[in-house]
Image 1: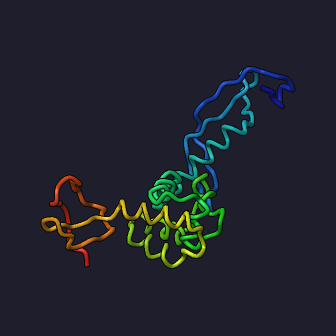
Image 2: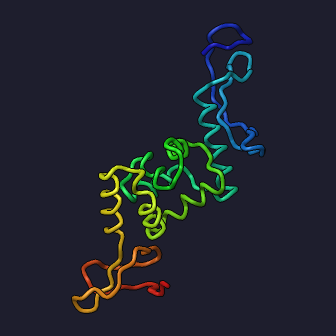
Image 3: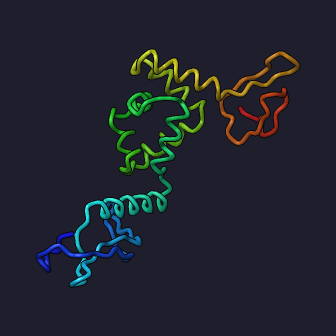
Length: 186
């Protein structure tokens, strides 16, 4: 790697160093990976390491402020079988918004909370129905199929007596007609 101080290619070593990154107007200190010149000891700019360090700083910022991590956003979206664009349209966001968040950009609190609410199928279902004209018929069918798979059906004997889509915090055995958990949904 080239060292600007030595003005030649040199051997380098990567070391952990505490660094502070400005994230949304706030200083976030992380343990960074920094490349150093073995000859003179100066730090050498490494685009790849700096990008990784920045993603770590963003992740720490999200943790500190209770924001969803990129993988959590992806899991919520994939639960409904939608592309990033289709999911964004259902939520009423710009076409590239979910892509940016899944790639590491930080959502503001309002958009984070909107995505967080989509963990519950009944919330997603309401927005899907409201915004179904903004997505393709095929995407709508995919989302409806995913919702149906997430729906909990309460049976009495062989007759369905109740159906709902908020199965979070419930454990159930799909081979039996009895369920455990809080069934007090109003």
